[in-house]
Figure (cartoon, rainbow, N blue to C red):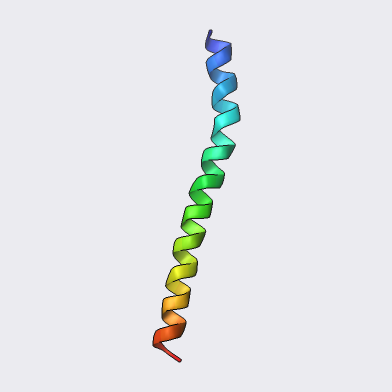
Length: 40
């Protein structure tokens, strides 16, 4: 059972990291777009 839990963690972790980075990247993109709009 512990092995199964560890395996699922290993499988899920990269997915969570990808989701987190995609959200962060979108926020950064929005900030950058707002900055360009305000200072052009």
